[in-house]
Amino acid sequence: MSEPTNPLVPDVVLQGLLQLVQAHGGMVSVKEAASGRYLWANDPMLQVLGVPVDRLVGHTDLEVLPLADASSVRAADQRALGGGGVVTGEQRFERQGQRQDYRTWRCVLPAAGGQGPGHLLSLWWNDTPARQSAQQLQQALAQIERQHGAMEQMRRQQAEGIDRPSELFRREHFEEHLRREVALSLREQREFALVLMAVDRFEELRSRQGDAAVKRVAESIAQLMRSNTRAMDVLAQLGEDRFAILLSGVGLATAYNRMEQLRRACTSQLVVVEGRSFNFEMSVGLAGFPHTAETLDDLSQAAIRALQDARKRGGSRVTLAPIRLGDGSMTGQAA
Image (cartoon, rainbow, N blue to C red; front, side, top):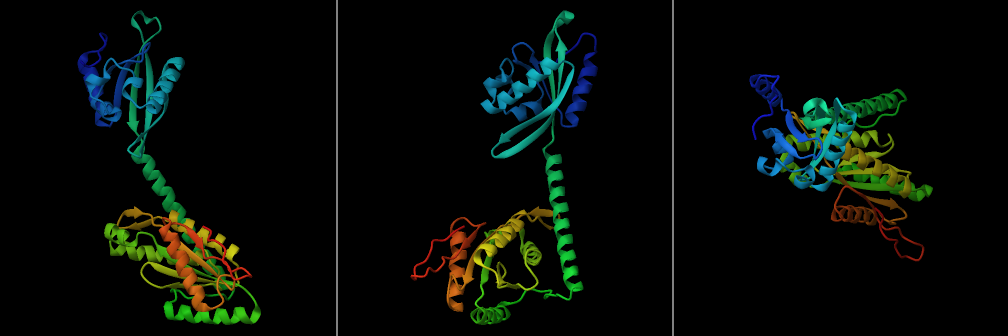
């Protein structure tokens, strides 16, 4: 269809305005006010609507768009026609699982002779990149705030004379702490919890993001472990993607709540490597002494099985090992 014209404005002016709008990513369409049928749309608008020009012109939104999209567009059109003048708003489409956000301006053009509305001129701009950038900025600021809070917590602990290692323990040192905790638990009749954690889809993460990203993920996990535990808890890294925590003097219910908080913190953590940002998820297995097992070996195996169960069930969850009952039976697992 030819470009819309106005006998009072030279065609060259309208063409220039249209080129200016398109150069800045503007999407333009014109409809009949009474019927809602399209009279014209520029190429960017055709791409957004997902139809060729011969299927658009002479048709309404209900005839060319999914019902949900057509209903929202028509409702916005009706608000503009009822308000008159220029009406601003927002439009949102879902395309293949991806959300697209648009800023919109709708202008009612009078009919010939000025008797009521004749046409509806719509101008859209894609606002998705700006919103995504704003969301990433908010995530980065939240991460900075969390890191600041962790540093402030460490500063307070040092001021109070409570310090913890700057590096996570390795396996042999962690196992020694576990043996001591078992002896203390038996002597004083108190509980403690053993936590095993693993990065979900670790090899896929390495393949997609690279070795530098794997290192940054481990650093982020260590930071989150410190900020979500107490100075008296023992933290360890058992491998590239495996971590462990000994929660001293803590029962299973309290341990579960704390580890769920840690898991959520990992999920929301934004890792930035060479200008790329991404997230990661953790599976967590949790066992308690003496309610889950009576020996250190049994406790370790219970935590391993709980972690394996968390991963089998899709990952990004905390799974409890079964609790021993007085008759020797075991309760079911919870997640």
